Image 1 (cartoon, one colour):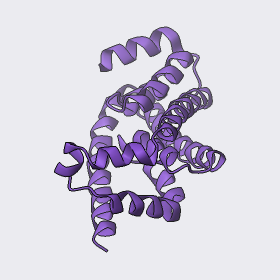
Image 2 (cartoon, one colour):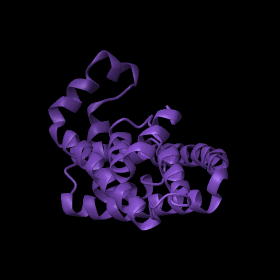
Image 3 (tube, one colour):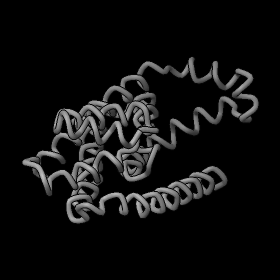
Length: 195
């Protein structure tokens, strides 16, 4: 996949960066780390510049997260209750009170959750769905998403630019960060559930 990403960015520049970032948000297995750090590296030997790379990546991300937000808006409480009552819901030991608790929790902590999750791999994409399902104010959602996304994109693009030809070495450190971030998030969720 990495080779295809590199080929697309080499061929289509800013447009490919925006498109890939939108796609990455809809299909989280596409690695934004590769897109952003490689794009940062490209600013060292092409006429692409860091500001436009960050701008393209951020616009693409905003498109992808907006799509997922509205997917979340389509998921009603009735749909969630059907899932809870399904075989999968029973296997996960979900019940109706879990749905109510989730809505209450998101109403209290949804803003900080949307912002912080923009820095956690995979979750940074998927958090848009519960934000939509909980009917978080769209303007607030966009503002928090823009802020978190711009920070994440800037850090990775600048790291790729500084690393130059060694941009792939950054991916090793980002992978370690990703693992640690996911573990911390899971611990926080578990603590919140058993509080």
